[in-house]
Amino acid sequence: SLRVRPRWLQRALRNLIDNAERYGKAPFHCLVQPRGETCVIEVRDHGAGVSDQIIDRLREPFFRGDTSRTTQGSGLGLAIVARAAALHGGELLIENADPGLRVRLILPEAILPVR
Image (cartoon, rainbow, N blue to C red; front, side):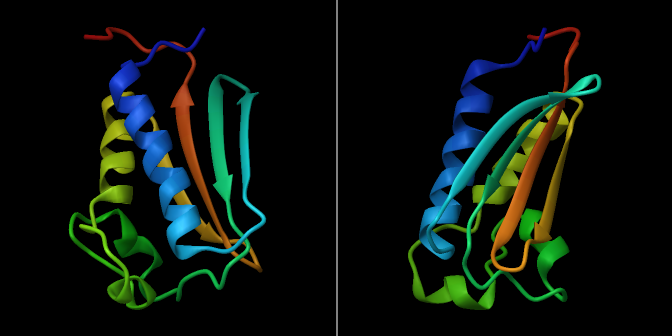
């Protein structure tokens, strides 16, 4: 079973979907599936993606990619998702999907303790 902090997971999912809609392009896909001893939550868009030079920096608080500078936002979206992943013992993977961006939140099935 997957044990999570509901508010953190809700906020992470909202940020993943908001980012896809704000910076990506339709169609959008959201996939949740068990994979081994993890649960993978994947959000993908079909936009331009991001340059390889900045992809790893997207997890940093207040960092905003070049295309996001013309839109509103704090630069905290993916940093919050990365924090949620860390709090649950998971990880956040970000990669270009050609076209678009694929973001995966990977959570272990058994998380102890949940506070």
